[in-house]
Image 1 (cartoon, rainbow, N blue to C red):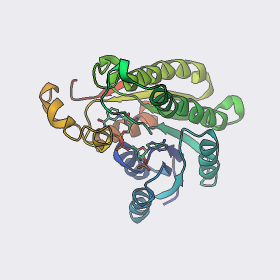
Image 2 (cartoon, helix red, strand yellow):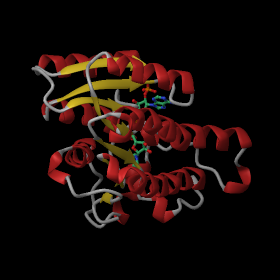
Image 3 (cartoon, protein in one colour):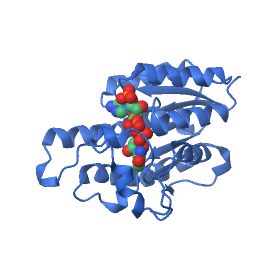
Image 4 (spheres, helix red, strand yellow):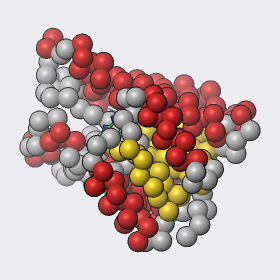
Length: 250
Ligand code: NAP
């Protein structure tokens, strides 16, 4: 199936919300560059599944904390065709800690992966998609979190603050490139059933938080993916600088 929509880069596209977005976007006609950091098997399995369903996808290994890896990611994506979309999805949480316990190394890694990488990826995307630079326009979706307005006290305030930065980045970049054919929006997931909770040392987090969710259930990665794909598409042509909470009311 030839790409109808152009090329889409998804950082952290190999598992969780990123993988669900790769499947949904490929179904919607995007050619997808699936970035991952370490788990090659998961990335290859996403690519194979997309191809089995007639879509186009490649896997690109790279740590978004490294600016050279980001440049290589976009270089590989260029080989697929014209870039028209970016999902800044790769993100990490740390172990549960109070602010007065957090090391400088932890804070630096958190901000590098969750914030600076999104700036650097957006830079690459704007340089290719902006009409100011001879591009054809496009759409950027940043994956924030409801943590940006909740603060995550006693759990991971650094993560929440990194997502607060993503919200402000979304607003500012959206206004900066609005005239140039690029829309920039954010989704703010609530509690979504992925491996991120276990990666932060809290495999029971979903069970613990579920009673506090107005809908009394966690979300599925696919439910976030559908929202992202809508924001990428022309269906949302007059939406920019917006935050869409996908959180069951939380
Ligand atoms: P996940 O299941 O832990 O998956 C993370 C993905 O990001 C994997 O594909 C991983 O690749 C990749 N990744 C991690 N660090 C990376 C790096 N430095 N460079 C490149 N890729 C990297 O996470 P998720 O739950 O889907 O979360 C995705 C996004 O949604 C994050 O920004 C997160 O903050 C946000 N979010 C999630 C929730 C939730 O409840 N799940 C709620 C709110 C917001 P490897 O496997 O190769 O490491």
